[in-house]
Image (cartoon, rainbow, N blue to C red; front, top):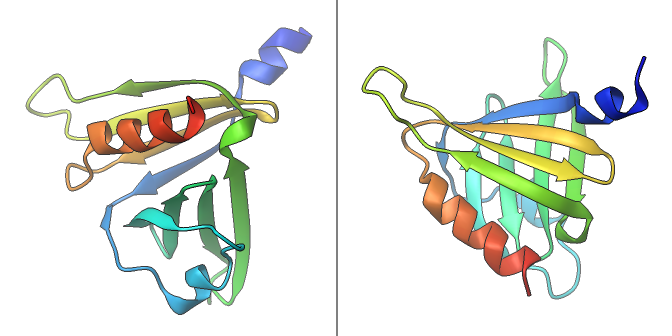
Length: 127
């Protein structure tokens, strides 16, 4: 298998459904000086764009008691792309991140503004 193709495969994918108020559990993950810029509801939990990283809490298993936390520091993002809806029946938008660890994909429902997301990323990554 070609090494370049392995790096280009999507490693993880999430869907953000709507904006949400950050939970206490999510707030407890923040470091000194870190602030949540926007928070989203995922399938079973939450994700946040902070001033330092993208933070995703992913509940697992049937009961959802086990939680995996993903942290994508902005400094690890090499490139990103956003795709907005183009047709009436295509209601979701997409964001892809190319990082030092591989490629990640985030789907956004119509209740999430892809341009707001893009602006937060631009402000954090391009400083």
